Amino acid sequence: MKKKESVKKPALRYYRKRIELFRLIDKIKLWPSRKGLLHGIKSVEESGLQAKITTHCNKSFIVNNSKTSRAARWLRNKWFKGVCPECGIPDWKLEKYNSTRFKRHQGSFLPDNTA
Ligand SMILES: [Zn+2]
Image 1 (spheres, protein in one colour):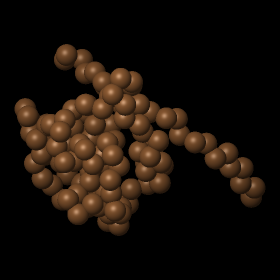
Image 2 (image 1 turned 135 degrees about the vertical axis):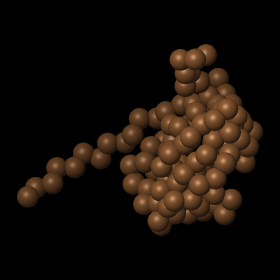
Image 3 (image 1 turned 180 degrees about the vertical axis):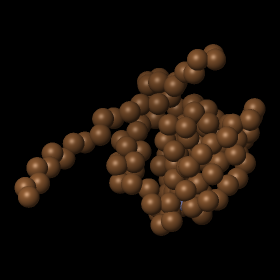
């Protein structure tokens, strides 16, 4: 079987820099732990200013919606030391994450319909 592989680079995505954390994780579906390990997000249950996040390795925790939280900053700066072996984040997702840029005056605010 011949494998025709077109190595397509994922399109660059731009998000506003001061995007809310919940919007960010809703799109990216990745979570940087305090230890610097990137987890895949299985579900996010929003309730007001907090959300319960469950990762694919079945950890869950409550986070506050904030533009300036550690997690938001880490996600924007793509700070992580490694990828959680239990979450099994697919490469394409990491690629997509890797091609995401954050600029102050460019890109989407990812507006929701309730705004
Ligand atoms: Zn994990």
